[in-house]
Amino acid sequence: MTMLDDRTTAATWPAAYPQGYAVVDVETTGLARDDRIVSAAVYRLDAQGNVEDHWYTLVNPERDPGPVWIHGLTSDVLEGAPLFPEIADAFAARLDGRVLVAHNAMFDWQMIAREYARAKSAAPVRQRLCTIALSKELALPLPNHKLESLAAHFGVVQQRAHNALDDARVLAEAFRPSLHAAAERNVRLPLLECRPLTEWAASPERPRIGHQAAYRANSWRPSRKRPACPYPNPGRYESDKPLKQGMRVAFSGDTSVDRELLEDRTVEAGLHVASSVSRLTSLLVTNDPDAATSKTVKAKAYGTPIVDEAAFTQLLRDVTPADG
Image (cartoon, rainbow, N blue to C red):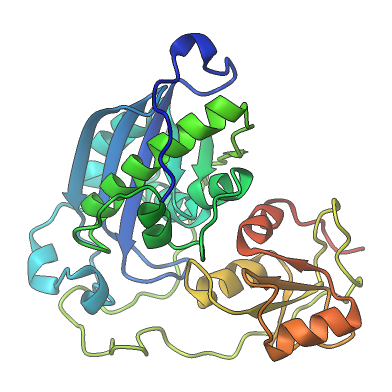
C-alpha cells in the first residue's frame, strides 16, 4: 500500500486545477442506453479534495429494477421512491460548478445526461474526471482498474459494494490522495468535456417496476445479434490519431465495466466489434497485454495495435466519420 503526504498546501497547488469536485456514483437497471438510474450519491469536495457534504437518493425507474442481486434495490423498495424529475433539481445543485468525478466517468455521465434529457433538462456539468484515467496518469501499481483495487491501494475499506452512497464514499476517499499525488508531481488532470444531451428518443417501453421475472443472475441482459457495421474498414488504428468509423475493435480480458457496455459504446460510435483477432483487426483493447490469451498472442503476431480500457474510452469521444 502506498501512503501519500496530504500536506500539500494551497500555495503549491497547481493553479489550473478545478476549485471543486462532485464525486458521483449511480446504480442502474442495466448498462444499455435506455436503462435507468435507481439510486444516486454525490460527495462534494473542495479544491484539495476535502469532503464538504454528501447526498443520496433512491430513484423510481418506473420499470423493472434489473440486477437486484447486485444493487439490492427491489421493486418494493423503489415503489415509493421519487421519480428522477422530482430529484433533478437537488441533484443538479450538487453538481453545479464542479467537476464530475467517477470511476469510469463516461458511464456515470452518460446515464445522468440521459436522465436529464428524458426530464427535458440538462445537468450543469461541464467537465468530468475518470479515476481510472487518473490512476493511469499517476502510474499507480494496480492489478486491474476496478474500484476495489484503487481503494485497497490507498487503504480505503469498502463496506457495501454496489451501494451508491458507499461506492461514492470509497471513491472520494481514494480520490483525495490521488489528487494530492497529482498536485505534488504537477501531473495534468485528465479532464474531459461533458456535452449535455439536448433531446431524447425513447426506446420501446420495457416492463414497469414490479416485474422482475425476466431478470436472472448472469443472464439479465437480453441477448441480441448486433447489426453489421455500415462502414468499410479503414485499416489499423494509428497511435496519436483518432479512431475512424468502420474500424474493427476486439476486446480481451477483464475490464472495469461490463464488456457489453463497452461494446454498446463501440457500436454507437460507428465501429465494428470483432469477436476474434485477425489481420484485419484495427485495434485490440485489453488491460493485460502480457496475458497469453489467444487474442493478445495473435495481435502481437500480426502487429495489431493494443491499448488499454482507459485509453480506449477516451478515444471513443472523438471518432472520425467514415469517408463519404
